[in-house]
Image 1: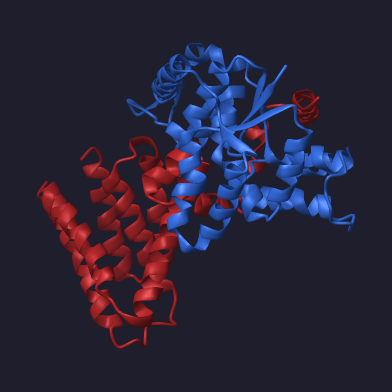
Image 2 (image 1 turned 135 degrees about the vertical axis):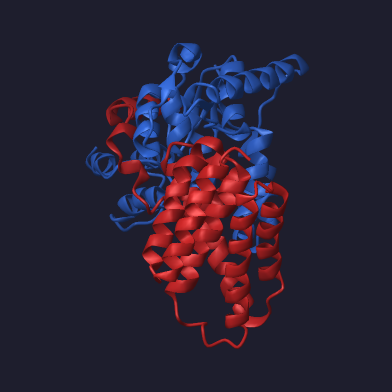
Length: 222
Length: 186
């Protein structure tokens, strides 16, 4: 059965900024399925940065990956497209009214993240999400911990209606660092220096992958 | 404007800190705004946070202060902040926004090295405030949109801030996550 790996913008930007998109190509060859992005992610990783000189090169490299079909849009029927849009808006509505502070809803996610999550719910094949940023991952895996972070940082009481979001509980999330772990195990990293794997893990951490120092150390040892 | 009282209090404290030349206080006031900005996501609050943080950075560094246009720029910048404060006191939101917009135009009207420098200070101020809001629990995509910056800039900056090292953010044992990754690649 075909599988899908749905990418949020962060991991692709991270691979690009670290100059390791070629590893993503090799991982794609090993993967029995598609690396999928949404139109919102395409905008964030290619269309928008093409207008910023500092990120233009990275965007062009990602565009090539898209043109080659390494990353692609999901092959959806018209009905599934409608379902996706509906689901995305539903996720936005629920997640952005899930937490309240000072009598207001806290809007925590944007269309891009909501669309990636929605796509993983709409696709029939087994899927996993690749997300580097912290909030969307926590929303899926431990929304109460996210409430605790909000409460601590905002220095005010934050309430939640977590029961509204049971649908997300079964989604699978991995990060760019787990992809590099797989590349390491499959011997896809070309750099011969034994420090390359660790350097990549730190490169990804310092370019926005939400991973703790302890987890990096564990990944090194495994 | 939802947060008029809060902005008024902050601007009043900025003026006091300016008189005392307490630039660290100005920076900390801009961070105070972020708590409210993360909840309300009100563009007026966000603009105020960026302007105040930029002010602290402008005052902190000396390198460009011998530029012949610096004094004129700085005095106008402070005047616009004072006028924005007065407009808020009168509850004249349109005038407040006009003053904020005039600061933007003031920067656009600069030329030469000073323009490059001030532009850079403002760009970095936006990224700094975005990183703070992300740290508060708002997603990267949402934060980038609120501040009008790219996820590229935010990811690059926030990666160095230790956001991933917060214990509460470790939501699954690593071995379990690796198993998920291996299963999807099987």
